[in-house]
Image (tube, rainbow, N blue to C red; front, side, top):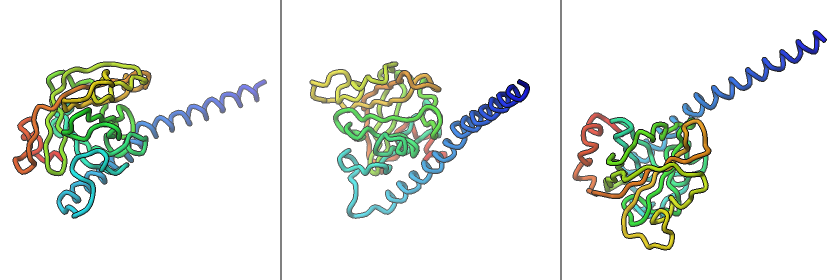
Length: 227
């Protein structure tokens, strides 16, 4: 009996150690690896923009984006003066470990339709960890090779994971042809679970050439070295 109890106790200790190691992996190691990949995507994209090739993906147009590759940056001042993330084409787990991911069937930055982006809220870099701090009236800026696109947040909403209508060109109205340039950000809700989705909806309010400098909502943070 003593041997059985001792063996069961050792089994519980071993299971506890395994659980702790898994938690440490999820909380620390995946973030570390995602940060490395995000910086790599950022450096690669900045280098490509600084030395553009004659042939390659266009500035906008989701059909020309390359899966798994960065093509833009997202800036959200409400998440911090220096918050930015590369936008990667695709929303698979490897894609979302490199930044935030663009839903391939949705519009590109600044295009008519719905520019829809997903991001992890916990682990794997967790770029949208505090997306719940973004509210109506806040700004989201998409930066491409030649343009700045400024969106204003209209509303936020909690939905089920099956609410794919949020990705429609006109969210919730699949039969309606889009005329506006919309933005949708998606992430898990609550932060440490995945049984809901937190959605941020917005629309384009301004665009400007990169040569004109960053929009006023970013000017201070970018001047201090925000990527």
